[in-house]
Length: 303
Image (cartoon, rainbow, N blue to C red; front, side, top):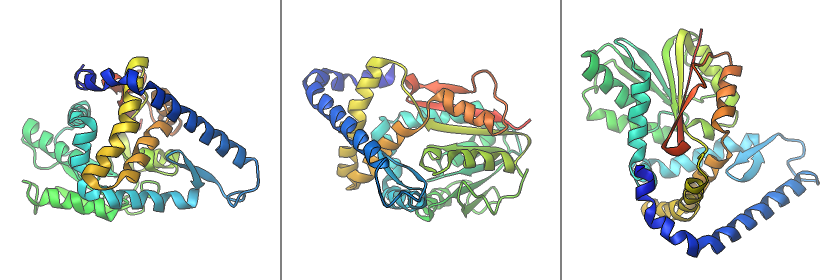
């Protein structure tokens, strides 16, 4: 209920903003209609496979560079913006993510799209605090060197600096060339998979690098299942978050993309099926929704 209480000031404004919100929806429908119409007519993308970059259709070959630019722009303010955008709730989600993992002593973790290192740090802290273990290790990889540098800075002032518990690599989640097959116990990717061009290839690579019995875990934004909360969430996402991006990071466009990318990601059920299609076994429905479905933890085992 924390998110709902914090969003109450916004709900009082919803009635006044309904007209503006409806206009935004009409504009979005018109844009989508135009995109659909253009796909049936001649375009420079006719001979290329396309994918989404937010609400835009772009050639698959261009998405990686576009996403790279976004995260190069936001790297320095990434953690501050996460707190501002989620009202601090992302910390609760990440804590729950690690508790759900419940890693044991000596666990070897591959943290993909590791960003500024908050998952990796929580993992090592859990092993140290719960098991008094200093043999667990994490390899943090990210396609964006700017983000990886932020992670390195975080670990320089941690108890894990100058130990063999951490390593860093620039790697593409779709092609983990430097990671051996069946070499890690747990694979994590938090708030990163939706930015990848081929989500199915990312999951397949996770399956490859995991040992038999290993676990795939993904924390990602998802679909809100309450109509009222969904409407408030849409207003907050499209009207507030880009403004926060402009005020805090002087970058409205990157945060507009990040909001749009959330809406393009599959539902909990669809993504869980993609994980099973890659060969993983899931327990129950395979996911846990967090905060009305704003985010979800997905899990699969390589049996």
